[in-house]
Length: 285
Ligand code: G3H
Ligand code: ZN
Image 1 (cartoon, protein in one colour):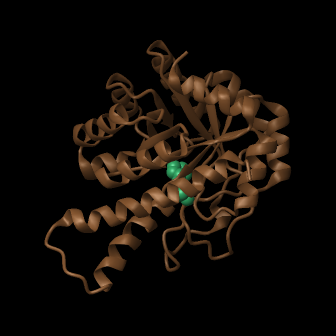
Image 2: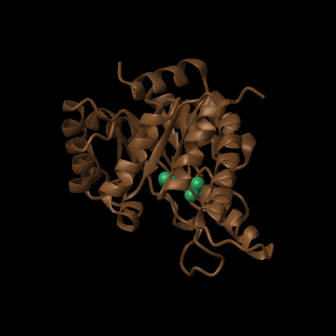
Image 3: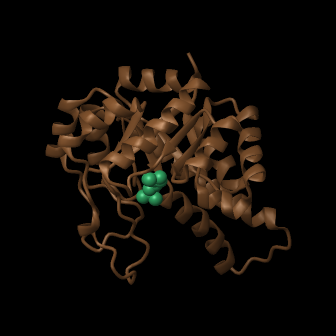
């Protein structure tokens, strides 16, 4: 059994979640890997199309793969929110062990068609596929116009069985009140447990919770313990920790001529937040 399949199986059996922690550079990737080692916990390191646009495909993928190879922790390279099927296939060809095809911007039928196509391609190469049903909104800033929780399209219980059955997908990102980003003008989002209950009744597939940043800890634990969430995604809180470490150094008035002196502080901040999330997702406190 591949490492990622074993990670999913163990999380299901023991009712905890492993994290997908997103990266776009060296220090974030190192911070994630170090946290996983310290906590002796498996994790996925997620890269997105925008991270690749920033860093370059081979520079980022080789960097993360190098860190995974040298790490003592069980880590898996994952494509997060792959929206372009050609790009998703490239990731599969280049050795990713887990990919997300996010065709959730389409109507149900099209989402099924695109997802199924990727599943067929991926499974031939032993790669697992995550998909999304429903639409998760993103909060970027308090002044971003037109982004509100009203734009959320929660996962429809009437669609989930058909989606899972027809696509053959391995894990499913469900939209149950969760949103991307930290800033929530309407307050931190609580998860819709009635909906989660209804979805869980319909399918046995492992669920993934996106938008983990800012979601109340009690909600995250309950979703993991009682509703089969086996994987939680964190991006924004990592970015905030990284930039926070950098900013604190700058405003402290200290001098640095070596970028490593500053970036090591950011790396430590990333490690700290990832360690906290790992503890939370373990649900053993
Ligand atoms: O796919 C990425 C995640 O869903 C991250 O969400 O930025 O709210 O932590 P977040
Ligand atoms: Zn996400």
